[in-house]
Image (cartoon, rainbow, N blue to C red):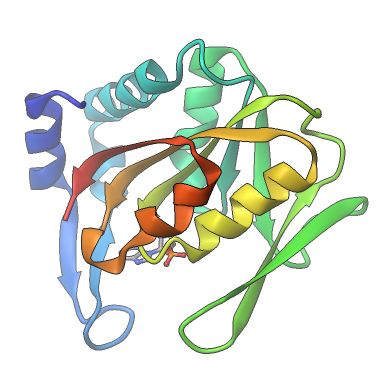
Length: 178
Ligand code: AMP
């Protein structure tokens, strides 16, 4: 559980933008967090405390999963592996397709950067439908590593993302829930 003080500070810092990028979506803008270095440090400390001693590597999802994921990996002194959108990584890489509301998307990870048997944290800024995070976890498991934790700054509970992740039997941490 994150501290009430941190939850309150984040609630008043994250901006809610209605009807962006399309009508009906309330966009959670996390960029004001970076205007407050102390708050950023507190977020990293919270995320690192959840994972300390429990993971051997952190995988972050492009692109907002890098903003906190790398700092968490450094705090834990474990490797950080980038999960990128299709077409950005040089070979060798592995890919995973997943469904979007309209059409499909694909994410990729360099092959060999995760080691079989490693305990892995998959991190992103926000959990919505869980489609992206589920595909990321499949990439981890294709490498013979085990997803033992997921962490997010924000989870949107109406979209049932957590249900999609339950098959991995991993711990899930979110600082804020809407
Ligand atoms: P999903 O695959 O549906 O769980 O979508 C998660 C990804 O989409 C995350 O990387 C978020 O950065 C982004 N995202 C989805 N919904 C929102 C939202 N309401 N506000 C900000 N980012 C969002």
